[in-house]
Amino acid sequence: MHIPRAFRGRLPTILFAILTYGAVYFLLHLLYNPIGQVLPRQWTDSADQKVELPFYRLVDQPSTIRIKQKVIVPRGSALVLPRVSGNRILIFLNNQQVAAIGAARGTGNIWTGFHWIDLPDVAGESVLELEITGAYDLGIREVPYLAPSGDIALFRWVTSVLFNELYWLVLGLILALGALQIYYAQIDPRLRKTYWLNTAGILLGGFYLFDFAIRSDSGTMTSYLWARKLMLSAGYAAPLLMLMAMEYYTRKKLYFSKFTLLTTAVAAGLAISAGSLSDLKKWSVLTAGLAQLNWLFLLIIAFRTRHNVIVFAVTFFYCTLVGSVFSMISPSSHIFMIQIGYVFAITSVVYNMIEEFGRVHEDYRTAYRKSRTDPLTGAYNRFILDEVTVEPGDAVVLIDMNNFKVINDAFGHHAGDRVLVEWVKSAQLHTDQSDMIIRTGGDEFIILVRGARETDMNRILEDFQQRVSDLPASFSYGIEKIQTTLHDAIQNADQRMYAHKKNSRSTWIRRLWQRRQKKTA
Image (tube, rainbow, N blue to C red):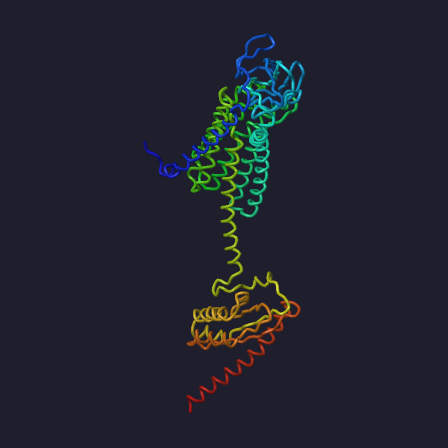
């Protein structure tokens, strides 16, 4: 069988992600192993009919089942319910209510995690009763057990973090990541659509994740129905928006994008059209299958990226999605890892964004450097003067080339360019790294000298003239210490420079006249 080369290159990472998922699943499975006394599987309902645990059933309308069992409750015991399907649970001991999970309206979301109920101390045999109310399903998916309260403190904390707090942590990370991507969209116009679409996809995925968070109440039955419709639809739309973001990022039209749009529309349409919670539950099996196709396409795109971190995270996340669907339809499975999968998925997005932002930042630095750098000489250009800060004691050296037009006319503009380049090299050689060499015009420069130091302009002149010994090149300069502002210092240095240039021109004319006199003698 032919395996695409890109896929073969990612195969070890994919296998590692699947093995990691299996390892995490196994560790979570250990949490479901009873710590104390497992209760009997045979219970009776209110009509004295036998009920075998675990059990699970769908209901067409809100229904209640009450089951009971005779137990001996050791002192300091807690009742552990690993997973109960329903929306409200009442716990009775000897006809006395000892706990209630979920609000009286029966719209609690309590089916994804563990529940612990500290039982009162009673002597002898007692009757334990569980009353479960479900809007669309009922069941006990794992046999309850009694455990010493003092022995399961760490167990309570671990399961609470994994099945309760972790959802809220992930939702917080999603909001923070969305805000960060919106910020990135403002500073990188080229990827603006990518960031906006990816932000929308992540936020919709977070809203879908809210369907797995434990909460005691979801309002009325009508509001609960519409909340679940919207949450499921958000879960279907999230991968579509992420795929669209990938299209803009890669600048390639994905061959299955139209099919993904179709599956999303069908899945969301089926969810929205459901007339009751029971209908929505029945449709969710089919719509979940369609949604898996969307996430599968996103997984295929991830395989094409050059980042093994993204391939690993998205593969792990997809495994948690498939596992969650299997847990919803199978009475023997009860482990939900979608919140952990989302942590991996967000990690991959953050990794990609950090790398992308690093590239954007480097591009920005390059563009900024070019905008403030003279392309011929490598010195700063005059725009840097608007940004520099100076202190009293710094000095300004204003430089202007002598006879620069003569050099251009007599030897060509390439010779003039060479003069400018070699002067900058000489200045860099004999100034400090903290000093700034700035080209302000055609043949005009400024050296901004930091601190109370003197710049040996004669050494610069000697080095410069050695570099261009075949050309009649020299320069004039004026030095002024900064007392008030940079602008004032430049004006004063300019006056000194012109005085120096006048003297340099007279000296140059006198030397030229002397050379001509020698030739005629």
